[in-house]
Amino acid sequence: MSDGKVRGIVHFVDETKTFGQKGFRKRLVVLEQDTGRFTNFVPLEFTQDGCDRAAQLKVGDDVEIEFRLSGRKWQKDPQSEVRYFLNAEAVNFKVLGAQPAVDESVVNDEFAGADAPDDDMPF
Image 1 (spheres, helix red, strand yellow):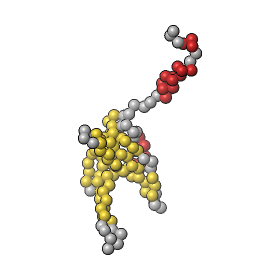
Image 2 (cartoon, one colour):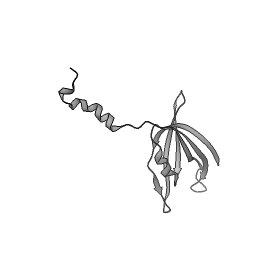
Image 3 (cartoon, helix red, strand yellow):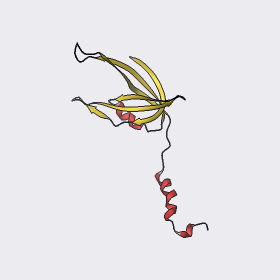
Image 4 (cartoon, one colour):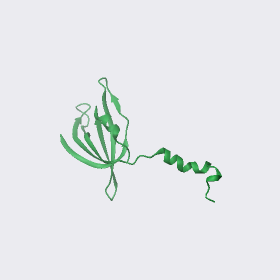
């Protein structure tokens, strides 16, 4: 296995999914990186208890995620094609800059002016 770090903006946080009788859990988080030439989307998987920690991540957060690369070989039967799979399993993360939360009361107050009595008008 190989370890590394990747930094980006959280683009997508999937729901936790459970597989098999033993209840294996995983949760996909996709980071967005603007390289100047094109946008790079990096999928990382949180597993088991990491799924719960990933709930702290919000779309728009600037994060650095530590990951472990793992690969595997799969062949249906001896006559079939061999396939190789690569997974980036997230093991830890750090939020470097959080997306500011939207204060719904402020948003609602801004639009309340349309229904406000005429006495509040400056003219």
